[in-house]
Length: 73
Image 1 (cartoon, helix red, strand yellow):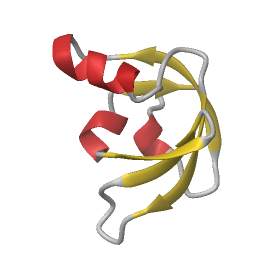
Image 2 (cartoon, helix red, strand yellow; image 1 turned 180 degrees about the horizontal axis):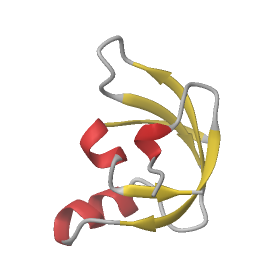
Image 3 (tube, one colour; image 1 turned 30 degrees about the vertical axis):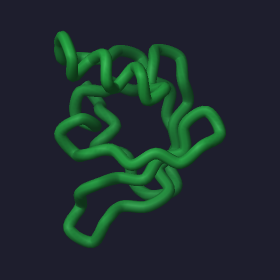
């Protein structure tokens, strides 16, 4: 299983599934990361957390723990 955390800067991927439950899953979905959405990694902080993504035409910062819950292809 490949997750959003595994992407390198400049790579894009399509979201296949969201793991997690309850409020955490809802928060990820509210940020626009849903099944079928294409995300691109723009930057990664020097210590690897957080990631800056382009999602649906806007920039989004997401923590490594949340990125690990997003399965991609």
